[in-house]
Image (tube, rainbow, N blue to C red; front, side, top):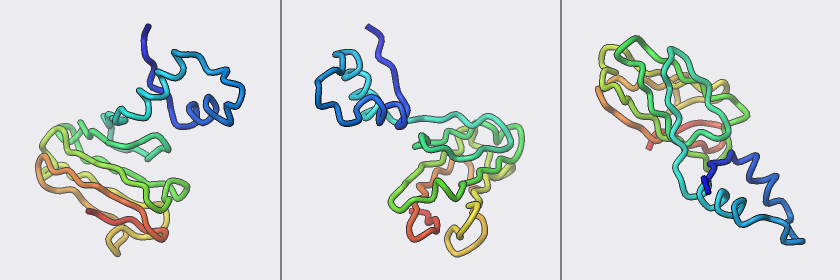
Length: 132
């Protein structure tokens, strides 16, 4: 059997009020694997918009150019955290900029990762973003 990593939306549909025990053994394995695994999203272009399934952004673009990450308003929910990593190790030359569509990040309009191989954890609280 091959385990499948499912999105949060797929898991909610699969496991929603399962009172009749109609979930298969494979579906249960997929659910457990999905909940345990870290979602790693490769970012390989100059722009990326955060999605509901993002947990860790692996930014492999700083050897090519700058990267702009936008955090949409719908994804700014209290308690949400996302790790962002300069995977290419060249952010001092080609920065990674994180910009919320609404609210602020660390009290300003955008936050810049400008150190090579740097990683940050960004979390949401009260409609704003903060860096751990």
